[in-house]
Amino acid sequence: MIIEYLGHSSFKLTESTGTSVVCDPYSEEVGFCMPTVDADAVTVSHQHYDHNALNLIGGNPVIIDKDEIHDLHGVEINSIKSFHDECRGKKRGENIIFKFRMDGIDVCHLGDLGEACSSDLIETLLPVNVLLIPVGGTYTIDAEMAKEYVDRIMPDIVIPMHYRTKDCKLDIDKVDEFLKLFDSECIEEIDGNSIELSRIDLSGETKIIVLRRT
Image (cartoon, rainbow, N blue to C red; front, top):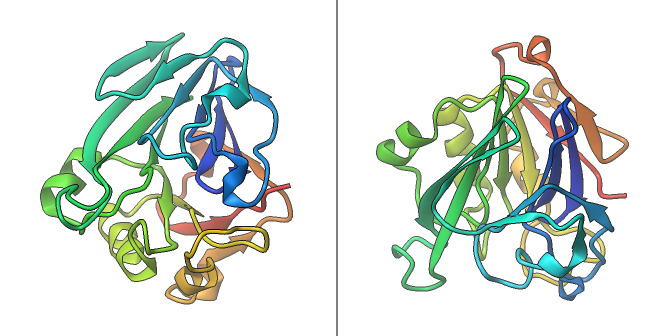
């Protein structure tokens, strides 16, 4: 499978069969423009402008923005209800976590998760090979809480998202705050926005991979 980082919290996930899903497309109000891409489906974690710009995705995709189970040409898509804040949604509402199974790899996109790490939620999420996790704080979990999720989920690969970059207008932290919580030998910063993975790339030891929006 191919994981392509589109910026902010948006990714395009493509199975070897060609079936593709875009997660959380964003409006240019974040400070930069969403790339033009096509997809078979689009998942929306919640209805905020930096996660629901459906009009920017081509290909007449299926829209998945509810707590449902989908089989998209053999790609399993499961959704898990969670909260956008630490007050059970009283501040910012609910958030949908999406899990995808592509080419035998379990990918979890946490959306704008804001709630504290709990045993019940962790048990619901497992197993996870690739974890796409917000780290910027303010509107989501922050770096330290993200580290706790990583430690308890123990994925093979962690890709941070929803952090401040040069053009970002949101009041959130840079990815560095998250990276400094890990040993440097388990961090790989890619000079590009995509990686290709297969089961043989899953070592059982957690690696942090930082992808750059191009």
